[in-house]
Image (tube, rainbow, N blue to C red):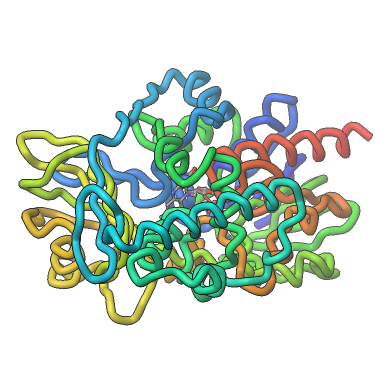
Length: 418
Ligand SMILES: Cc1cc2nc3c(=O)[nH]c(=O)nc-3n(C[C@H](O)[C@H](O)[C@H](O)COP(=O)(O)OP(=O)(O)OC[C@H]3O[C@@H](n4cnc5c(N)ncnc54)[C@H](O)[C@@H]3O)c2cc1C
């Protein structure tokens, strides 16, 4: 079967959907080809005992004006997350409240934080020279005491989303600079869509565009016009194409006459390999965080309580010795930080094993941070790139996906007019 339209968009995450919707608003006929049986990509809402949980991304920050505008456009409410009321730490092998490290380690903590702040400022100024280091190499070069090392490793989880030996340190110090320090990284997790990210994606998908689900693109020919072939052998022709798949999914799409060299080099470069486990836990305090080195999950967010049952999110990295589908493993991870908690229900999605994401949020690989430079993904022939992995602003966030989708739509609109 053959079909034609003005623009094909490959991928129905927020990046692709935003590009498609903007192009449709400008009068172009658009078809979105989506590999999965749903829209939303790495945004996916689920429920635990009737309570909403996000298997992919959760939060947006006060600076994320594009997300806010999209929610308003579709009449969807924003949920404001309250300020955290308490924190606990698991450092140097002990669970602690109050100070994150033993008293005698405070000088080491102070020295480390001063250096991190200086490096974050240098990164913003473009004078930071250690971008090729992994987070682990960076942390160890600070010569931290054992508790400070665990504190920094736990904190890295929030920003990096890759094992510290494989993620570049820039994912830690970049956000520290842009969110006003280590604490700003928590307080910026301020909002979420009250109805979930899937509902926002579905609203975009229903806004004047045609979405083909279960249509993984296996090949594209990109020259003066574009042709896409899906796994079931269907062929789609268009005057232009927007490629809005995760960078780790690019190798599965054969491009003729070939991806531009900077793109081919970067395909598969996202080191993001986070684990996110959603839980219902009885008997712990709501509205707090827990950070450190535990058993598989190292950064915790205790959300709201209903009838003494708290929604909890735990983050870790994909490792061989922790199975997020195992109750025994998840209970052990929980009890390392919340020994008083009773695990009721839990769920997760394996974004790294999922062939339509092959990774989590964008994390630069250690030694090759340059591979995730958005300048590599410039428009070529009749094609433009979109998606949070290639965004010029707020890369790695939903906001970045929307920003990049709007930019790709503008590029293609200009091309079609010309
Ligand atoms: C666990 C986790 C936690 C996160 N936390 C946050 C957070 O709190 N806040 C935040 O802002 N962001 C967060 N993120 C990041 C956020 O989810 C992503 O930045 C955003 O969803 C990316 O949107 P996108 O459109 O660029 O890509 P995606 O959402 O990945 O969409 C790409 C689409 O392309 C499709 N596709 C892939 N290959 C093909 C193919 N060959 N043919 C057709 N379609 C294809 C995929 O199925 C997918 O639907 C998190 C992500 C994860 C995984």
